[in-house]
Length: 70
Length: 257
Image: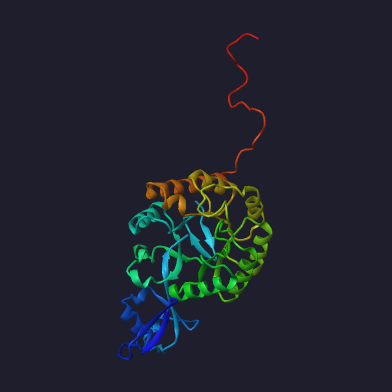
């Protein structure tokens, strides 16, 4: 079992479903990676590195995107 | 109309549009088009995992428009810097509309945190467009740290009250060596025209257009007002006087005197 804190909420993944990379996580969540930027443990991860950035249980990740605003 | 130049980049339009509060992405896209805008602001927020397909901004042609991310929601310089870096990672563009608004009721910008953030962001290579209260001293200090524009508010964000800070904005314009973009509170095209007549370089409008019954029509009205105001400014306004000055000859009347 692995736990990730995603956008402020804790999410538990069974061992065989634990996403290995940020790209895996986005795939699992069904989030289109082309519009997303990620921050892992306070460090910005560029989109081109999503598939090579490993995730480990206990990490905090923020997934943000542009929304309408003034 | 003469071009607007921000950080060396030329723009034909002097009307910047905010993308918030539109009823649909279609209404937003039509309004941006009708406004003839070239710069549109967007915000950065957490992805809503439960509603992840809600990508309203896919309606914006990013080749045609410069997306200007804002740091709305930031209450401190540190939060604004974090948002700016995320926005840069998301767009690959280093332009940012810097907003630090700790007070949720009036959403007035914090001058100290804004200046602090601006200085750091400029050093990190950002093109910084700070949203500020209409404070001429702050404007000068921001210019000194290298911001690309100053964006003084006309009245509180989304209030549609118009140009309540006129006197201070006139001083800011007089002292500015970067473009002055009047932002926030412009509720009618006449407000925008007034700001442009005073010599503002551009205006930013969101609520007044997005919440109009017909946003695209209102966007066009703002576009025309901005063009009218700028053209009037460039024409050199005639002087105001207390007494009447006849426009018609004061001789040759059809009466015996």
